[in-house]
Amino acid sequence: MTEVAETTSASPALVTPLLAVRNIEVVYDEVILVLRGLSLEVPKGTIVALLGANGAGKSTTLKAISGLLKTEDGEVTRGEIVFDGVRIDGTDPDKIVRRGIFQVMEGRRIVADMTSLENLRLGAFTRRDKEIAADIDMVFKYFPRLKERTGLAGYLSGGEQQMLAIGRALMARPKMILMDEPSMGLSPLRVKEVFAIIKEINRDLGVTILLVEQNARAALSVASHGYIMEQGKVVLDGSAAALRDNEDVKEFYLGGAGDQRKSFKNLKSFKRRKRWL
Image 1 (cartoon, rainbow, N blue to C red):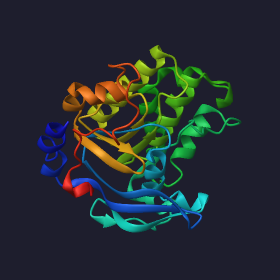
Image 2 (cartoon, rainbow, N blue to C red):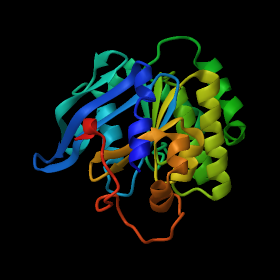
Image 3 (cartoon, rainbow, N blue to C red):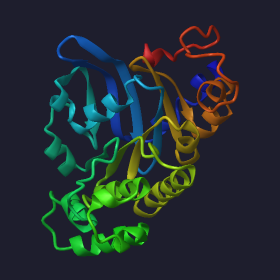
């Protein structure tokens, strides 16, 4: 366990990160501490996975980055979030979108009583250029099924709605997409399809992706680096390959050793890296 934490820590730091979250704390309703000194980095052009159980603080991390905490009476009370060299914590969500970050929310959050095409146009609401039609064609190239679905988006299957949510994000021409549980509610076949497209988008378009997932196996199959969260902080990070091969990660998140352990908390052999303390 210690070996992964100590030998893989330099992986993201070798490149100037597009996104750097530095020792942030997040409080809800002025009393509930959710994130407890969380730090992570996402290099430009990569896919980075953020893993952890329910309640670890993964979705809160994404909302802190995208400026959505205010909608839930939350705020960053300590630390900083830097995107593309500019500090963005405390910035309004619409301005963060214009800077190049778009979040695909948990549960998809497409507009059910609008068509797929209307949902895609909604994703381009911050743009003033004349290439929106060309980008719609680009989205249909990645998701040809959406072109065939001309009715209301609420009638799409779960997998198709997830594709529409990702396509809507692409319409903003983001530098970075935050994806919150894209596999939620999907069949294994659709999960495989969606993650293959995520990898293709990253490769073809160079879009940086921070991927929050409970399906650790799927996330680590497309990511280059991963962070594991527990109780509001990062407890382990490393290359995706190192995490896949780590015995404790296999046991906790990849189904490799039944249900004998529930947490890293009491594992004597685990030692957090100093920069997380």
